[in-house]
Image (tube, rainbow, N blue to C red):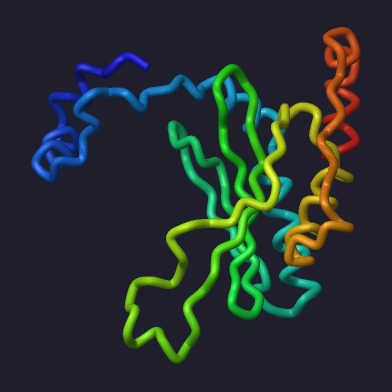
Amino acid sequence: MAKNSKAENGWVYSVLKRQNLLDPNGENIVDLKLSWAQIEECRIVERLGEIVGDINSVGGYSMLELQDYLPPQPTVLRIVFSKWHAEYVLEIIAREHGAAAVVFYSLSKISELWKPYFRNQSRSANPSISLELNIHPAEILSDDLQRWFSYLVSGFKNKLKPNVPRQLSGKDHLESRPAVRKKSA
């Protein structure tokens, strides 16, 4: 992404520069516009949000926590399920060239007895990745989302592990896009 000269002269730039929060090398600049556009076009965030709402409503409490992000962040959204001494996380990450990934990982939580000694340390430093699926947002069906949530709330039980989404050929992909949106909406 090209730097915006207007942004460099604005107050945001000056605040970030004073706090030493700018990327000095610009190494981490990756163009995720295509991926974000496809994610927004397929309404993945809204669809997942509706399922989180349904699960929390049926469960009778806030069982799942959803946090969504704005472009140009690589993280699109994060859904957390806490159980016992662990947090189970489903995270969607935007990738280059319109692709994305769904990552399932867990984090150990510090016991309540130790919290006074380890303030601000609610999560372990090293997440344990259980599964990573490369996806194309237009190919995600409601059945795929159901499998993701079943796997998440099970605490990543192997028997509920979602499969890699089927890859469509170019012709099938073009023909199925409107049908996929109708099925998944």
